Amino acid sequence: MQFLEHFEPELVVASPGRINLIGEHTDYNMGFVLPTAIGKKIIFKFKRNGSDTICNVYTLGYEEGFQIDLQQLAKSEIEWHNYILGVLYELMKRTDTLRGFDCTIESNLPTGSGLSSSAALECGLAYGLNELFGLGLSKLEIVQLCQTAEHTFAGTLCGIMDQYASVMSKAGKVILLDCRSLDRQMIPISLHPYKIIMLNTKVSHSLATSEYNVRKAECEEGVRIIQEKYPEVQSLRDVTVEMLQEFSSQMNETVYKRCAFILEENARVFKVTRALQNNQLKKVGAILYEAHHGISQQYEVSCSESDFLVEFSKNYEQVLGARQTGGGFGGCTLNIVHEDAVDDFVKNAAVAYKSAFEVDLEWFEVAPSEGTTARWMK
Ligand code: GLA
Image (cartoon, rainbow, N blue to C red; front, side):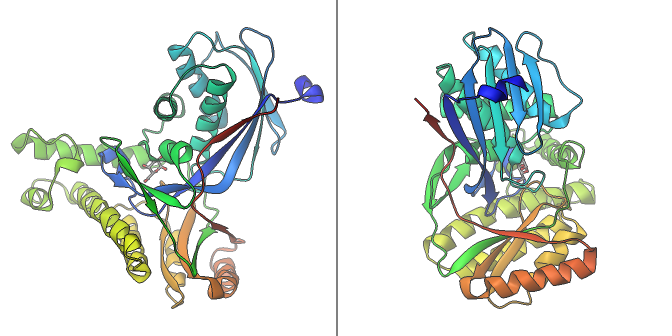
């Protein structure tokens, strides 16, 4: 694209991916999550280009770009374009001061790996344009408009966790977020001498075309059945274990399993938070294993590759716990590993994974990191 030849950015934005320690699929059920941003991120470089409506976006890794007219925003056939287009569409609905810009995008965040590369893309763009054009949106408004963009343009009826974690995280903390009230507590996390090691199955999910929306509908079906007797129930957040048991014979087995998982997963968020606060790391690990069992058997959003890696980790006493993180059907497993055992663990996991699936395992360490940041260049 031509603008790249003389591109001197005015603004640079770093937009991170996230991990979720515990609380999977609870966000769209108005429950609790415990995520944090990580050091892997997307870097956006922005410049106003003087045009009223023409924008140029270019990804450096893929050497691919496209031009957008702000007056003609419509869904694209190309998946990643929709994250950009959706955000621009939502911004245009809220402001009349957005103008043409040029932007490059560079990322070291693996896509489709359960680390919220899509939220990082949406939020980094919205955050940068808010700053560049002084749109006056709060961080929470940015988070919410990006979630809406994902619903309408990308087609995933996601909860708020990914966008919230990407924008709001603080280094060294996990966010205990109530996805109904959006109250949050920043919980300090110190795992020393353990590290958070991510193993990437390289099974890439596509949430929009996967079972994600089906899971959401199954949970809503559970709520609908319970509401017949308890009309005050608005979401699974309002359902107690006793209430759910009362309906076990009126729900089909699948819906019951999904709802039971969500109730248990919400409880696990508090158990992990307490264990972190009391420095009971073994307990944290045990709850992660328990959660993976639920992800795999009750909520059924795992896959044989993730199950294999979680099982493999159990061979190591120095691995306290592991589970698949993110929307599911692949992506990464999150492992809490003693620092002395990391090399050995990842080496042997790679050998075992290769012989089981003929795939080269990728691994990296992550640490709770700062959310989105923006820096003016002049
Ligand atoms: C995806 C969604 C989130 C959340 C997770 C599962 O990452 O975008 O809103 O539902 O899956 O916890």
